[in-house]
Image 1 (cartoon, rainbow, N blue to C red):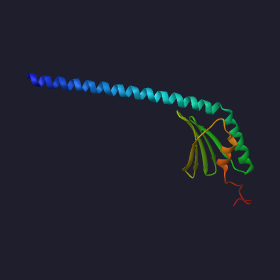
Image 2: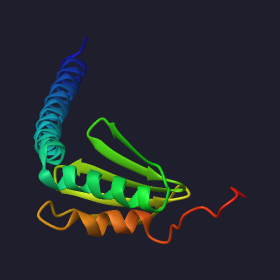
Image 3: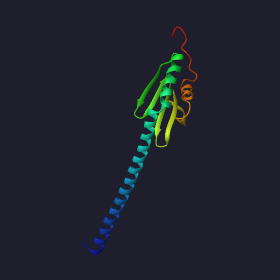
Image 4: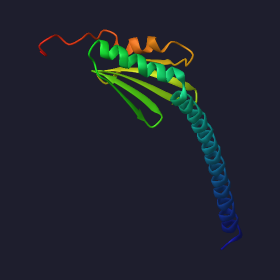
Length: 140
C-alpha cells in the first residue's frame, strides 16, 4: 500500500468517525427532547385525569345526554379522554403544549382548540351534543 493510499484510507476513516459521532450527538439530543416532551405531556395527562373540570364535564355530558336520550360513551385511550355520542366524538388530548379538545363528526375533525381547565365544562358538553335531539317516538 502506498503512502497516498494509506493517507486516503485514514482520512476516510476519520470522516466516518466524525460523521458517526455527529449522528450520535444528534440522536442523543433528539432522545432528550423527546423525553422532555413526553414528561410534559405526562404532566398534562395527570392534570386532565385528576382535574375537577374533567369530573364535572363527565357529569354534564351524562346529564345532557340523558335529557335527549342519547348514550354518551366515555373511555380513556392511553392519556386521551374520548366522549362519543351518536356520530360525534370529542377527544381531550394531552401534549407537551397543553390539552387539546378535538371535535370529530363522522370521522372528520371539525375543530380543535386549547382546553382551559379553569373554564366551564358545560360549554364543551354543549358543543359535543349540539344539534342532537331525542329520537322520534316509534323508533323509526
